[in-house]
Image (cartoon, rainbow, N blue to C red; front, side, top):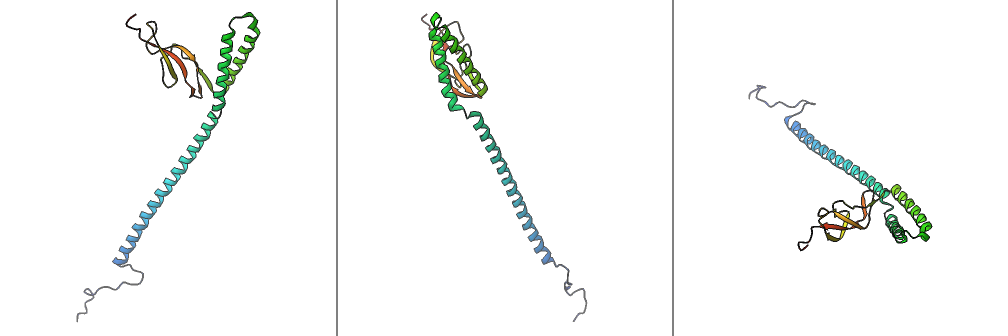
Length: 180
């Protein structure tokens, strides 16, 4: 028997790692690092989702504040229309002068209230037809105005903070009839 210590496998001294234990520890470390990375990514996704929910809720609240008066504004538009029609019907009749004066004052008050609430009147005479804000009820042949421009407003339109409440109902220009 050989007593040469070079050929005998070395026994691991207590506290020393063998290649098998190092490999096992490395494998466990790799698994733990992957799990840690997955947990970090999940945490980041959860934080991003929470921030998105917070921003969405904030936008919803802001939108509710801006457009809370929408139904009331739609009702008030009809009141304003009626005032304008009454003023137009009264015309220049001398007996209606006091009525006209009172109706004009009321109309100015309604317009000031509209302005404070963010309601804007659209009176697009002379502008190009815009289907997002105008409703064409008739096309009239003309050579005096550009094709597609608004010739007359039958009913004014309104926006609330830039959002359409009611489109302006308009007569638009079209090219002259070839027979004329």
